[in-house]
Each structure stands twice: as C-alpha cells, then as structure tokens.
Length: 150
Ligand code: RB5
Image 1 (spheres, rainbow, N blue to C red):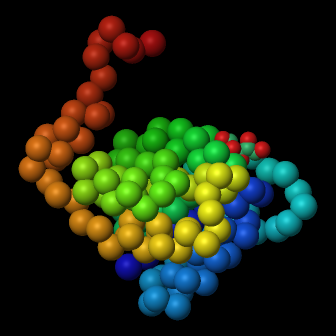
Image 2: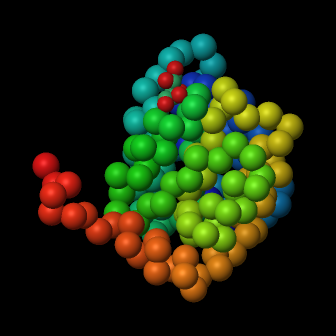
C-alpha cells in the first residue's frame, strides 16, 4: 500500500515519526515535504501535490499535516475524489473511515498528542468503510446546488 504524506513547517516532526512508522510496517510512502526545520512555509505548496497524487489514484491514502489541520484539509478537499478528514483522536479516525470513507487524514500538529499520532494513523489505515447508508451519503457530497454556484 502506498501512502502520500505532506505537511507544512508545523508538521515536520510528526511527518518524520509517521513516515518511519509506516516504512517499518511495510507501507511504501511518497513524501511531498516540507522537511526542514526553522523556516516557515505555506501549507498549500505541500498539500496540493500530496492531494493531487491521491486524487489521481497514485496513492491509496494521504496523510497531511498543518498547525490546525484545517488549512490542509480545506486545500485537499478542493480535489474531486478527495475526502479529507480533520482528525485529532482515535474515535474520529475510526468514524472518518467507517462513515466518510475518508482517503486523506488531516492532522493538527499543534493540537495532537505526538504519542498518539501513530495509533491514530494506524487505526485510520486499518479501518474499513461500512458502505450501505454511508455510501449513499458520501455520493451526495460532490453535488452542487445551482443556488450555491458562484
Ligand atoms: C501556520 O502558522 C498555520 O497557519 C498552518 O500550519 C495551519 O494551521 C493553517 O491552517
């Protein structure tokens, strides 16, 4: 399984921790940065390529990180086939997969316990979508009402 991963400067440590864990577990990873310390960067520059890679079907899942997880999720959710879920605890990781079939997990580097991120990521990657009524619901997500356009 191939996992795309990208973050801004707030998630450099988290990204290293997650990447090392995934490689140890036998996952392949594609790292889209950012990977240096001490310089502030703009999260869309790293989240766009990560989300695009998943959107194109080149990775099975994506992991994105920024300070709040919000900017990263907002960026990723611009892509037609992306369902990026903001996740900061295990229970939300499970439901993001079971109910939303999320294909990207967005982690808030400044608000998540570093000791829990491995478990959260592992649960996310190992939980299956329940389908059924949830499939009907997620299929309605891309529908845009004409009154909302513009
Ligand atoms: C960076 O300071 C911060 O704005 C960014 O990581 C993120 O939280 C945006 O949503």
